[in-house]
Length: 133
Image 1 (cartoon, rainbow, N blue to C red):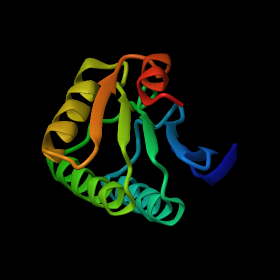
Image 2 (tube, rainbow, N blue to C red):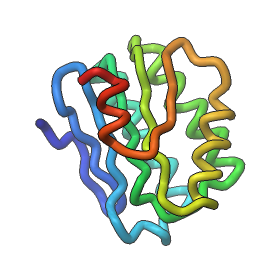
Image 3 (cartoon, rainbow, N blue to C red):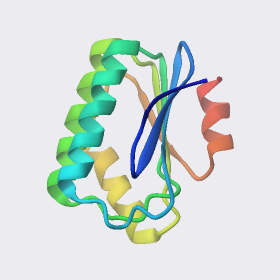
Image 4 (cartoon, rainbow, N blue to C red):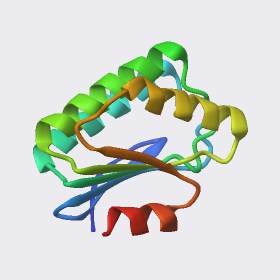
């Protein structure tokens, strides 16, 4: 496992050459939209560089709500990066907080029809089983 990026709010890991995972750390409630954009843009660039077949966004520790603008921006940015590189499956682990989870649900809906499978899960174990990694 290789740490591709680690910052104040999340860690992006290349678990295997075909599997990349993003994990939000605890205590991220004060993340700003600008910081989220920077982190997601960096993640998109790393997806393009490493070209994983499988991606997991573990949002279980995410504490802040994605605004409507950020929802659309994340959906577009990550979907484009994954589509360009041939990602086959993208798993999202739901946040624990209901309102935060709702913003995740809206972000996934904003992504619309994707050229890869996109699913939300309650636990990382369920997501890993679905991903087959």
